[in-house]
Amino acid sequence: MKLQDAYYEQRFENLFLRAKGNEFQAFFERLMGLAYKANFMACRPWGREGDRKNDGFLKSERRLFQVYAPNEMEAKKAIAKITEDFEGAKVHWGKHFDKWAFVHNAMDGLPPHTHGLILDFEKDNPGIELEPWGLEELRLVFRKLSPEDLASWFGPAPTEETKTKLGFKEIQVVLESLAGKALPADATVKAVPPGKIKANDLSESVATLIKNGMMKTPLVSAFLDAWHDETLGDRLAVAFRKRYEHLRETVRPNRIFSKLQTWIGGSERGAPEHEMAVLTVLAYYFERCDIFEEPKDTRP
Image (cartoon, rainbow, N blue to C red; front, side, top):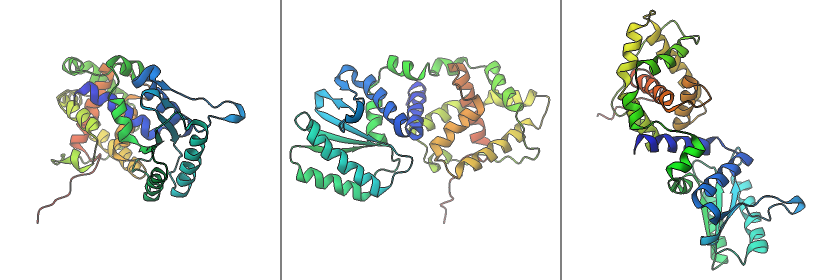
C-alpha cells in the first residue's frame, strides 16, 4: 500500500470508528455520494413521514440502504431495528428495490442472532437479497474514490515526495511542541521487538504509515541528541507509554494510533509535511518504547 493511500484509508477507518448516530449517517452519505455521484440518492426525513425506512438508494443496483449506528450495538435492539426497517421498506419502496443493505457500525460485526434473522427474511422474501454492511463493505466503496475525491474530503496527504523532503525543521516543530508538555522525570526505554506491528493487529494502512515513518526516524534521534535537555527523549518515551496505557483500557489499537497522532500533532490536521513529521515521531517511539503490545514469545 502506498503512503498516500494508507494515510487516506487510516483517516477513513478513524471516521468509521468515531461516528455514531446522525454523524455516521452523514459519513455514509458522503462516502456513497463521492463514490457513486448522482447514482446514489440520499433520503432526508420529511416531517411526520420521516424517511419511510430509506437512508439511501443506489439506482443502478436497485439497492436500498438502512443505516443503524448506536453508541452500543445490542442484539435485541438490532433485531427490532432490522425487523421494523425491512418491513417498512417493503411497504414504501418494495417495487423499487431488489437488494436491501443494513449498514451498521459494529466493529466486530453483527451478533449471530441478527445474521439468522437476515437469512430468515431473505428466505421468506424470494427476489430480495439482504446484506449486512459493515466496515469492510464500506472500505470497498471507499477504495473507489478518486484522488480528487479523497483530497476534497480529507485534504492533502503525505506522499513519497513529502517523505523524501522531510527535514530537521519539520521534526523540530513537532518535538518542540511536545517538549512543552508536562513530562515525567523518570524513564526506562526498551528496544522494540520484531513482529510488533503484527502482534497488535494493526490495519494495513496503519502498518504502512508506521513503516514509512520509521524511514525518517534518524531525524528524531538527531534532534534529541542536539536538544539542550538530554533527558527529553526518555521523558517523552514515558509520556507516550502512559498515554498509551490510558487509551489501551477502552480503545482499539487502530484508534489508539489515531489518538496518539492527535496528541502529537494537535486536533487540527496539518499540511502534508506536518503530518509526515507526526508519523515519524510516532514511529520513533513505536520502535523505542512501550506503546502498543510486544509480541508474545512462542518459543517452547
